[in-house]
Length: 125
Image 1 (cartoon, helix red, strand yellow):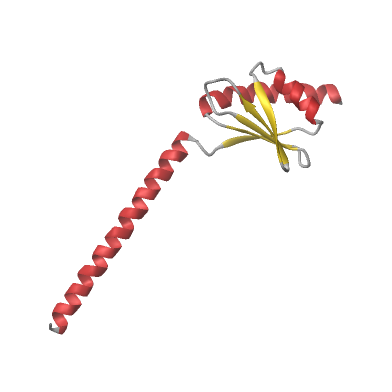
Image 2 (cartoon, rainbow, N blue to C red):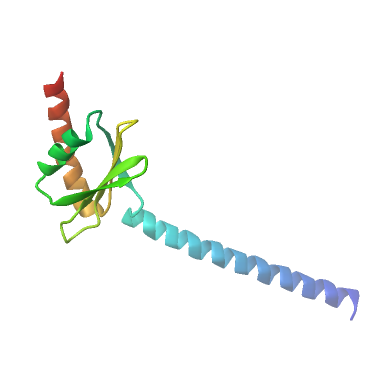
C-alpha cells in the first residue's frame, strides 16, 4: 500500500471516529436536555429551623398523606398521594428542606408549604 493510500485511509478512519463521537455526544445532550426540560432532577429549596415534630405538624396541614423515613443525616417525608413521586427531604443540622418530584404537583405544594413556613416563622418570633 502506498503512503498516499495509507494517509487517505487514516484520514477516513479519523473522520469516522470523530463522527461517532459527535453522534454519541449529541445523543447524550439530547437526553440531558429532555430530562432538564421535564425538570426531573430539579427541586425546590426552603429552610426550617425547628423540631422534627413541628415540621411534621406543618406537613400534615398540607392535607396530603405521607409517611416519614429516617435517612441518616436527613429526614424524608414520602407523600402518598397516588399521583406523584413527591418527597420532602429535611436536614435538621442546616435546616434545609428540599421538595423533590413531579413539577406539576410539586410547585403548587411548594407554594402552600412556603406559606405555612412563613406563618410558623412569624408566630415563633
